[in-house]
Amino acid sequence: MQGDLTRVGDIRIKTGIASNVELQIEGVIQNYVSIDSITAPAIPLNVGGSSTHDFGDITVSAKIKLRNEKKYLPALGLKFGFEMPNTDQAKGIGTNQINIFSKILIQKKFGSVVRNTPRVNLMGNVGIALMSAPLERFSQNDVILYGLAGIYRVTDHINFVTEVNGRSSTRRNAPLGTESIGQFRVGAQFRASGLRFDTAAAFGITRNSPRTGIIFGVTYVSPSIFTPAK
Image (cartoon, rainbow, N blue to C red):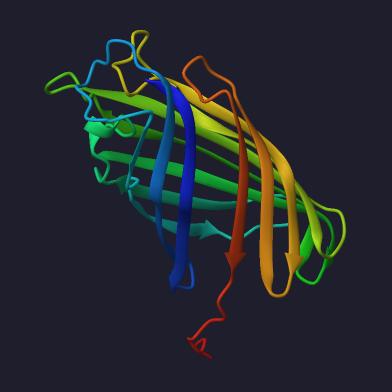
């Protein structure tokens, strides 16, 4: 099935549960696909008309800071979690599989700091995911996860951002639903009225990736309700 995907309510909730541990819950309230064509689907579909929609998969994960950033060394962390099978595969959007993953995180800041914001902030990750093969019993595909992102502070209220991320299959003939995918994004962040507005253009970098896309988001950072220990 080919078409245009629109995500409404792409929500990410993050909360600190310790000084070096963060819990994350990510998901999409509704995925909408405007269908252009359907050709011999490998999974039986239950879609009507020229569109389909469904609830998105929910990912639950935790981030652990292993080491603070030093003068010449980056900060190190670990992220691990799992993706739940919330999407009905018959809708043509998700694979209805449980996937688990683990990543090593690095971060390094450069340049002058204004209001706790560095001039340049570089982040990267590398890891592995164990993905169930939707059409092959007792089979999985181990994929390499990767990501590299940068934030450049233009002014106190405007940032330039760029990112590349994705996964690379370790099998030459990857099972359907576990193929290599990747995406390059470039955009900007704007701060106003206590909110951060994000906008970006996205471009696919592998054969199975979505070709292009536009992203818009709003982030609110809630003040901590906990009093730090003295």
